[in-house]
Amino acid sequence: SHTGSSERPWFQLEPVWEAAESVAMASGIMNALASPTWRVMLLSDGSVTRHLQLLTDIKVQVECIEQEVVHSTTGLPSCVQLIPGPLIQRQVYLSNSETGEKLVYAVSWWSKAEMDKYMKEMDAPIWVNLQARRAD
Image (cartoon, rainbow, N blue to C red; front, side, top):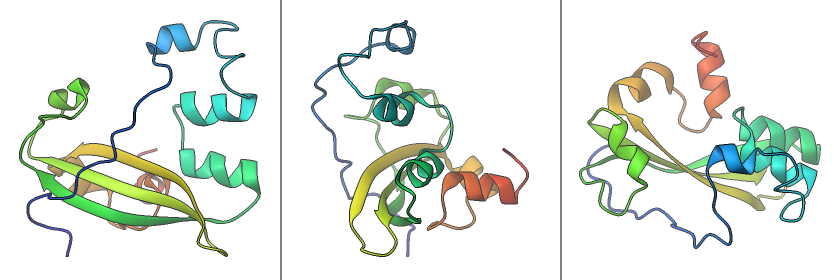
């Protein structure tokens, strides 16, 4: 069951480079740091799962490894504090559906009300859930 208190830490990474969206989107700034494909993946405001599937030409499977209530925002990105509580932390692997190879790790934080409203299928991509509820 995916209810109760979140005890699984999120995989906080040590960024090699970090910038505000406006800086990262400035013309040419990312060219030396990432290929066009990775720029799409990292800076898109759309579905990472869909982009990954289009870029790799493989069926991408979502494996939800956690979807739990978070009781403290200590150690989480500061923007998470703007989300009205109770807060849900969702962690997923995006994998090659044929081989099981993990391609991407993703974590997101949601208000419980929004999660309950839009995310009915835990192991489906966010965009699939939103489309099913006509919220995209």
